[in-house]
Amino acid sequence: MDAGLAAVDLGDIGLVEVHGNSHVVERSPEEIRRHRTESVFVCLLLEGKAFTYQADDCVTLTAGDGVVYAGDEPYIHGFPSRSRQITFDIPVERFREHCAGWNVHGLTKLNGFTESGKFLFRTLNACAGDLLAGRPKDSVLAERFWPATESLMQLDGQTNPQAPSNLDLLIRAKAMIAEHLCDPDLDCEAISAALRISRRQLHRLFESIGSTPHAWIRERRLDQCAAIFSDPAQYNVRITELCYRMGFNDAAHFCRVFKARFGMSAKEYRATQARIN
Image (cartoon, rainbow, N blue to C red):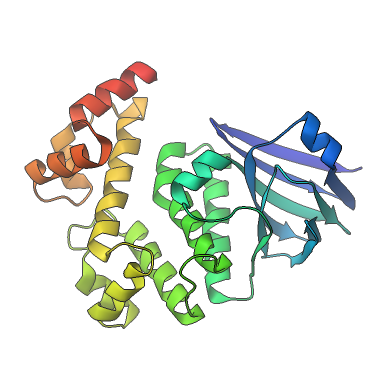
């Protein structure tokens, strides 16, 4: 077999880019019993064609498609011709932290022919490119990877199924928030104007995932602050400076919401991360 790979160790998450000629990857029931893998695989097909078979379900993929499946059940992943694929290997418990309520058993296809599928594919592929290039993992994961992965749950339709147009709008709203996260003027009015929808419709989009636009912006900003506090290269950044840099316009408010989310003050969180790292 003519093949090659590039891999990145992201701690508990694995990332591999593989290219090769025609081949099949199979994990039999016996292999599962011997080497049980409590993982969820998110695969993006960059070139060629592929198929995935698991539990009497089969999906076919062409370049631009993706598939999500559990690694603790037997599966066959086949490539009938030369291909290139990126795979994220995510521990089940970590996956469920961000996609609570999603039954990870069975196959979920990311269809590259839909607008939402195209956007998620591009986003996840860009995350993989940044991580393979050595960019800081915490910010890439918190700012783009996990929001995109959470959106896969709506594609699967297992919780709060939405009309495709609403799903596309929700994904675009999340993307705008991620892109303009540090802008202090980012608010419901700016997002709804950019999407050309009413503020009421914008609120309904986020209600479908149990949130609000304001809460989503706040949580993503806090996640990004936590990622920066965990980065040894940025230990010298002052907490107040980071607060304003991330779009918060009130330091006291930032301290309150940070403690409410993480159970400790920003200063305590940074000190804890410094000891860990």
